[in-house]
Length: 390
Image 1: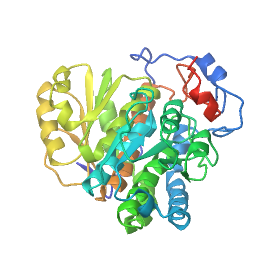
Image 2: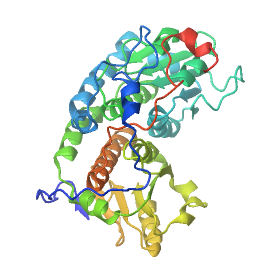
Image 3: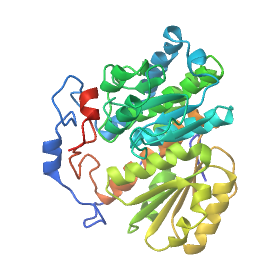
Image 4: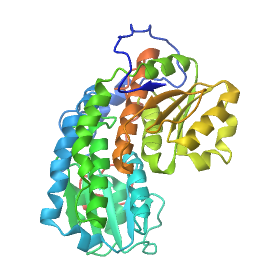
């Protein structure tokens, strides 16, 4: 077991790149066509002019989280969020990474007695039945078509949003829009993703308790320590996964944000097929294809350690990310600090970011490349969102 507080600081020499990795196609012209702002239009609303590299975005998280916390603390000064959202059912709407960001905050809202659900927006019929008293749209750019369309179908007075951008179409149609202040991000989201999860966690605190949990103040420092730790377990696991073509990323219900985002990072960066799911669902069939092509990242506690021992019967590489002193003789273990659910999900996600980086580096894969130009996922105005997709 490797504990972040005690792991060796010995640097490991770079491994040679491997060619011909499964699904590791590279489409350079897609990056040219996509452009720096990853925008399909030339309207008023843009995400940013320059992207960080994924590595720089990971490193920027301590400061980015501190900045996001400052912004989130100011929300209650401008809006009585407990009065506006407390005691009412909520539908949280986000797609892509934003959908992953919703999972652990949603778990925490439910744990505290809030009737809440999440949706991609893409799974809702036009002019369908109202699913909650208030809708909260989450989009880092504020330009996601499906999220914007969903809020536009809800009557005024029920529309709330959380965005990274300072101005956006989603903010424009919202009755109350909460901004993280425009934190610079990487194209494969890193720092702005973690900041979004922080914003959702602080929002949950404000809805249920009227103020942010005091532990948020410690989070930037915890992330900084986690990034400074060499965590040799990650290099060990990455080495074990050489030749494995599929990664299953499985998390306890409270850790589902990290599991889903970890799987998305594997798919979006190094183009490695990956599954992100909760532990209980995984037990009901998806685990059955475990074998010579698979590697496994588990996020959670005692039940995930038990799952590790069961998967080990197939001789597969297993990494367990946990905040508890669990017992397993079969998995490589990374221990993170104990923290409340949403704060812990950010620490878990940071470890997953590093796993993806280490696996990509060992295989010689460039996570900055892109496979496709997104054709109709972003819009530049509320009116564009109501038009049929091209």
